[in-house]
Image (cartoon, rainbow, N blue to C red):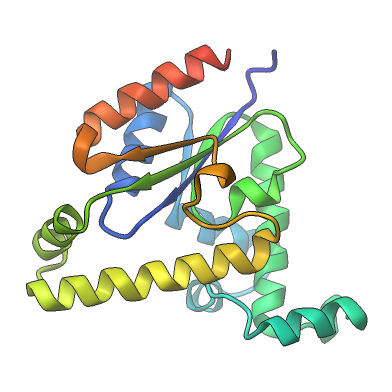
Length: 204
């Protein structure tokens, strides 16, 4: 089996998904992409990094817009800017996936690479109280503000994923190879389970 594999991590805000993905990549000795991906998309596409960051994980406007796109396909130059950014993201993710093993955080990587058999789709979630406590400490927010940010960010992530993933739904068991509750397992426990899972799949 090919050792060129991709671990695509979707995560709830405050679940520790970024930290789990980064430490897993360190343990595996492979590349890690989260915000780093935005710089690469900007470099590959020629778009400004500021523009890429603004539209990062932002869903398209509506289902009606999607249906219109299907009925009247547009050229790249005719696309709305958020569609251009997503298309640039698709091309960069496919490029880095072909270069070697890596961990990619968010950005519909599992859907973009759905036709590949060397992609492991992971979803990291956590109990709300644990997420609130993490966000309060990390971001310096009150409990109410932390809870509000979690709900707002997760709604945005779900909308983005569900819009572009078509037959998959963000966080649903059938849409991911493995889902983990980091508030039950802890950061290190989650990493250990993912590492063992990759071993069972024959990737490490």
